[in-house]
Image 1 (cartoon, rainbow, N blue to C red):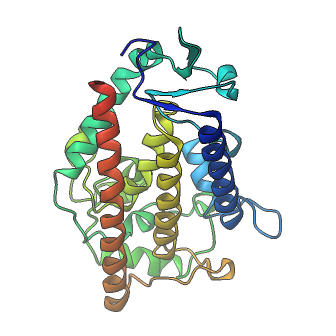
Image 2 (image 1 turned 30 degrees about the horizontal axis):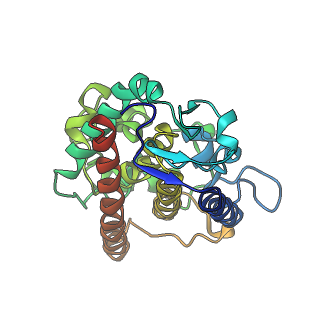
Length: 291
């Protein structure tokens, strides 16, 4: 795509409205998911998404139209990194930036397409969080007090197979838990092992979306963040931690009823993630082969 060839043109009224709607949406979402508790401490559930994924809220509020969209008038994007002014005076994402990011775009496309191609597995029961504290006497690994005793927490892990398929969860397992997983995971095999039922793979859609900003539109990024918040809540409710004081009712996966509840919610989340994953696959495909 040449610097003067863009797929869409937005008037100042159009992009100003979209930018304002985006900021309002982000502000409401962040207010509903604060990074700090009422006591002023780091929120053990919500702060994770900003610490682990390293996308600052201030940057999140900045609206981007995505690659191939031209902005008329004098948008603030003229001062943002990776934007250029075209020969006709339009502001758009620099095609040179896309060229620099094509390797990353290609990896994200390959990973998400491979994940989408597999049937979702719904038999992990969120035990990855339990495996992260299995036989650990190091309280620094605990983001909150455990619901059960140390021995009872360990017994839950020992009574079930660990079926984690997500390397970035697996790599935080304790040494004793690592060998209990049904397969050894590695970064090099990530594309071959991720599957669409995985809660963490769904949360990572936010990581992949914001990693590709400004090539990806901000509406897709915030849709991914909304999903990540919902999946983080599910993840923590099924975890070994006692978060009831913060309003998170536990899903007691140590019981048959709790496991059934987890599978039901996991399946619903996987369906929601599938829609967003397909959108990101399509966005990446368009970036790889722009028309």
